[in-house]
Length: 132
Image (cartoon, rainbow, N blue to C red; front, side, top):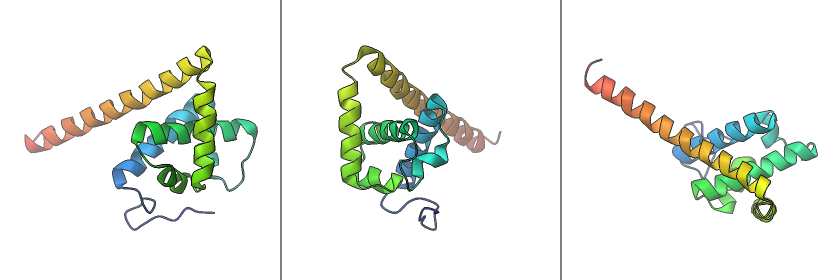
């Protein structure tokens, strides 16, 4: 089932920037876990690995983007209580040092990706404004 998108290509209730940030987080988690990004939005839970990857992405979207659990749920086509459950599971799992360091590496990757995107946008804007 296709997700509902507005005319601007984003999901209702999210700004373009918020939706783009969540898509980047899904891409980073999908790459790290080897899960197809489309599986994050499947109507079913899929397998355990897919559900865990989705929970991690939900957690990162909530924590790193400052989205409410309702907004994260809208993005992933899930209820806010599902997002709350995912966030609680991931928070609890961070008591394990190895898991915590893996999540921290993903958080760093998202932050680095954001900074790289801003630098590219700045370079492009600078190039356009200077006629390059």
